[in-house]
Length: 67
Image (tube, helix red, strand yellow):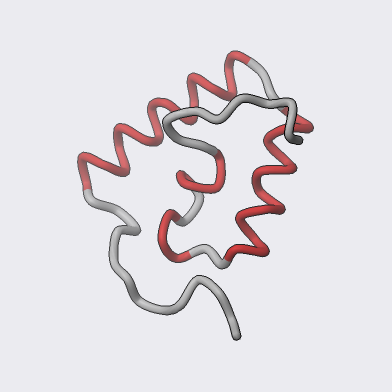
């Protein structure tokens, strides 16, 4: 997982943004590393544009870390 360079956005960000707990974000990022491809990156790119343009999943509704 640590051999993949960070990008502007990612699989976890387009699958919940601020509503995803850290444990789930890690699972989503591991899934991405296991399935990395150019087409998946294109999909993430367009999903990011849509989420930003519509302001989807951009509310702080709860904590992302359970104490």
